[in-house]
Amino acid sequence: MGDTLDANNEKITPRIFPLLLSSLPIFAFAQVPQQSSQLAPIGWSVLSGASGDLNKDRRSDIALVLEKKKTDLPLTKDNGEALHNNARKLVVFFNTPQGYKLVAENQSLPVAEQPNSCLLDPLAESEGISINKGVLSIEFSYFMSCGGWEWPRHNYAFRWQNNGFELIGFDYYSFHRASGDETNKSYNFSTIKRKEIVGGNMFDIRKYQTKWSHFKSHQKLTLTNINFADFYSQFEY
Figure 1: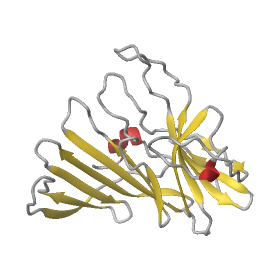
Figure 2 (figure 1 turned 45 degrees about the vertical axis):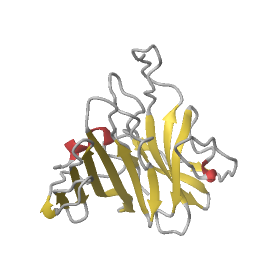
Figure 3 (figure 1 turned 120 degrees about the horizontal axis):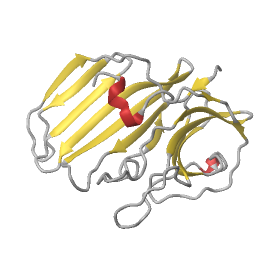
Figure 4 (figure 1 turned 180 degrees about the vertical axis):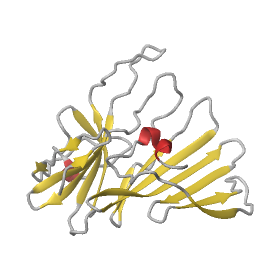
């Protein structure tokens, strides 16, 4: 396997971790595979995780969302409390005969709190990460406790192919909390086709239309080069 680049175009050095079965601290909104103890680097905590075969070798691989224990930019909210803006990252380990091997990393995950924002934690309010039929998915929920009526959800799907985790799908769903009007778009990065459902309303059963169109992606998006914080700049939304 060649070198893998992260979102900052820096090389990821593969690391091998022996299988350890001791338990992890479990967070209120997440469950993590018990095998993932000791996989977090020093200074990082495990927020959530998923396990399953990602590279068709019939071994259970692991994906983890990690959070730095200390913030790199200490800030204070108006009430005097510290802002919870600790850096986060998504890491993926393959289960090999020699132990767990780090194969992918992304450091652009949204933090729990942002300065002067009513946005709730995008991970705590979402389905988080999952592995199903060889596909790694991660979801973010952008719920505003003030200043906004829309409630968008972003779901990204990655598959291990061509020696990397390529983005194969992106789903955007949002509804207006007052009117119930829905926005529902699904992007297939294998066929470069977009499916849009028009006219939906979560409060009212009405007829809706399904529209198909093509979109443009100017680069091959992978788990290591995708920027979750500025995703719309990376393809024609």
